[in-house]
Image (cartoon, rainbow, N blue to C red; front, side, top):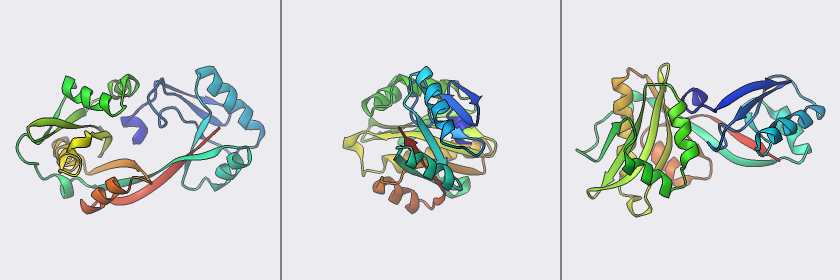
Length: 227
């Protein structure tokens, strides 16, 4: 569901690998995954395919892939960006936020794009949003009558995935992210989603505390191995 709502520009099989062409859309759309058991000889194929795309060789390690993790570690690939996946029932979070504090919209507003740009979410990631099929929406958060946060949400079957949550530094710890998540859940409810989910880096203690306080539960995890 993460890939359906945050898709690469292209994906293709190369031997035992699934290769993704991210085109500047971030780790998730640029990482390879394994689709069969591997040996050291297969790593050269990975590196050649990634080089052809102009990407740093990196592999997403999912739960149950301890053997692949060890193989890449032995080949000199370091751990990067461990993440956890949170989820909750939409009904748990779909409480309308205060008036004009956050709302869903599509196409994106210029103010939403400005917030993302200030946080380093640039054109490559906007193209990922554009590639994703509908239904989808941008969420803008407002704090003290000023645009202060942005997020993106898209639906895959019965689950709405939230991506690209960004809050302006001056608006942090003021409820902006909480209001945007509520607005995303209200949008998901209107789209008949049963669950809402998001991915956050393991080290982001502040965000994780917020998601836990909202009643979201950890339902999975993964990390990358990078050359």
